[in-house]
Image 1 (cartoon, rainbow, N blue to C red):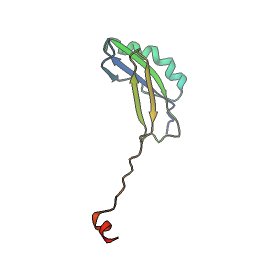
Image 2 (tube, helix red, strand yellow):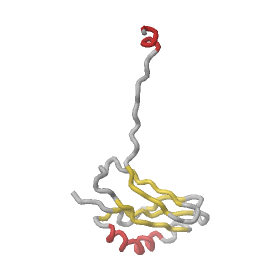
Image 3 (spheres, rainbow, N blue to C red):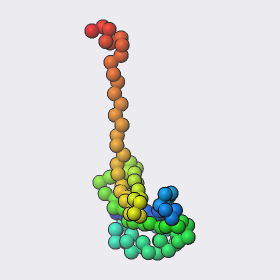
Image 4 (cartoon, one colour):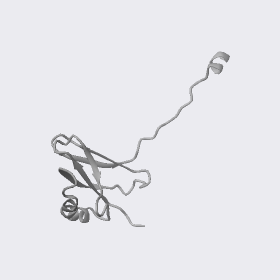
Length: 106
């Protein structure tokens, strides 16, 4: 199995950055961060014209994360800065409270 060290994230936005969406990367995963960084200019050129503004970055993938549970989270600031990370989703914990029957028996 190949180890993934970086994901190439490409985001296309409107001119005012009010609407943004992910664009398909020509090569979405890389074994090294350096390979990903090297492909950034070519990848951006390949999606040119699909949106008014194109933002892209290589996102580090922690090898300790289980890839099936990992989630790509990104946001674009009003100044055009693209923030992105791979995160493990928060676990939802369900709990069962005491029922009325249990409370009456006490």
